[in-house]
Amino acid sequence: MEAASYTPTILLGVGILSVFLGVFGGGFKIKEISIPKINNISRAMGAVFGLALIVWSQVGTIKMPDSDNSGKTDIVDVDPDTEITPPPGDLTSKVDELKPLWENTEISNKDISAEYLKIKNDAGFENLSLVYKSEVNNKIEALNASDNLLLELDKFLTDDLNTLTGKVEYINKFFSEESKNLRLSPKAKEELDKNKANLLAEMDNSARIGSANDFLTCKSIVNKNCSHSTSLFKTPKVWVWVKVQAPQNTEVTLKWVNLDSGDEVNSRTYTIQKSTGYRLSASKSLGTTGKYEVRLFNKKSQLIAKKQFEVS
Image (cartoon, rainbow, N blue to C red; front, side, top):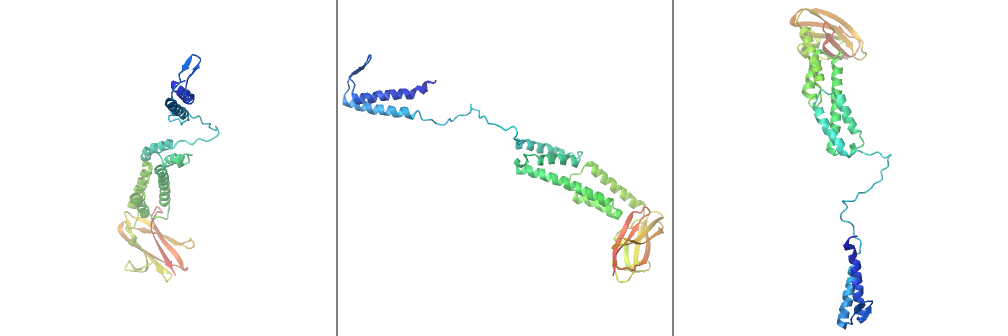
């Protein structure tokens, strides 16, 4: 026990003795100790001094809270069946680790999306800061958007009712606008470039039209040219006028389709000569009112032009 722990006891003893002297004034013996008699002033001072020592000794025994608990260890019981949520710092590190992977486009969208979903589904995700939660959610949305647009693009390119020119324009639009903030792998870009090159080659090596004004529906044909171009007809007879560019002698096919029923009304193949502007016209009397479309196909049955019209 430290010496400081005896101090209150010593003060208490001296205080009691001083009060005793103040009350009785001395003049007695305790075993070998002889206490002489003292005057009244000394007795009064001794009593006051003794009382002060007694009070001081008792104040020192009041328990005060420990200010330093550095040497103590709190023991907490943990239920072994309780799921322990990992500290947010662990998930924060995982998010940071994925940042360079995001730039590595050799990794597929599917694989990197799976890593972000693991973080989002983790029990500690809600404990992350708003900045990190937003980053995870934004990355997942961007990956989904990338895959959805690629699926839409693939669907458009494989649809036989989309023209060769329209497919090239769709790819160009994808690269210039829709893919700005998307994550595209080199493989995806390579496939799109390959598709575009194939489409351009098909256009260069087969019959095609130069612009939308080279494929019209008309009320009549005058001097081999379209007269009164329109898409609304009150008479059943409809003319179609085409200006075809052909790098060699080839064939094209015109198909007339009733859009309301989906039925093909007529189909005819025409032989055209090598030309930068071969003009072709044909007419069809349609007995049923409704919406129609006339379609122009090259020799490989690839759609190169189409035009909708209505008969009322």
